[in-house]
Image 1 (cartoon, rainbow, N blue to C red):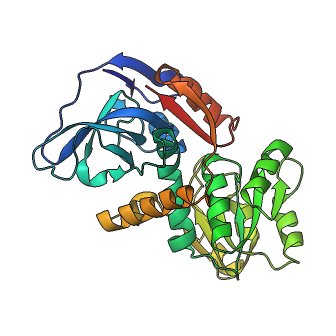
Image 2 (cartoon, helix red, strand yellow):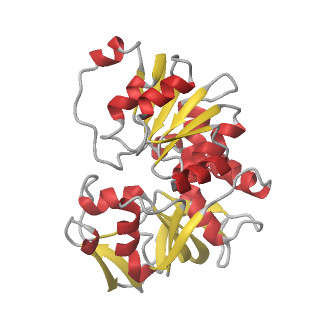
Length: 322
């Protein structure tokens, strides 16, 4: 089969399309024939070595397809079943082997491309708005990169929870996409100081929570957007990792809270994984959640997908198609 692998950390050119042996499922495992593969920022972190993996490695942690073969002990899945997964390495390929308990069923009303586009980012938006900081009608939230793949889902989830949403984006076209997703106000950070504008929009009070997937370039400003005892939820580092800082800053700026969550810690059990996935898929079926696919590319163009993602040239999800 074909797979995209990394032999040495580096830029997008480090991605190589290669012929590799077809993997065989072991006990408790399932081989999935992939129909669509989600491209996520964490894939670029793996490619660059920010989150080191044993090399060579097949990139990708999200996909959807059909069960192709099952290993010993797998009783509730059979060939032909439609499934999706997230946080399982090896998705940039034609086939992938995944533990059976990490697969979720895809409802008949959700196509496989949508499932691959939404599972990781949709469950991320779910845990951020339901668990990390459980939003309600009383809250005002600032969402950075509000027109990105996760951002658009996060805006919609926050509005479903009843919160007032302020989003930051880089262009007027992206601002319109954030508004279409439900954002109450949108700040063009390329033209406006997002801290000053957030303070103005909240009559100087600040927001209850900032959802920040950008990292290095927004971190200090995000702290300055919070009201006393506000939460900075740092769930990504698209602009690079945040440098070390003195925790006393959190006290000085208003007894603030800082957390660095990840989806893996919010899907620790099978029940939690299924509940979050089910909620996401049901929201799509009910018309409450719209999934934006920016574009699809063949598996052979994985490097181009990374270039597009890192250049902020996308709004919505990127998919690779085997």
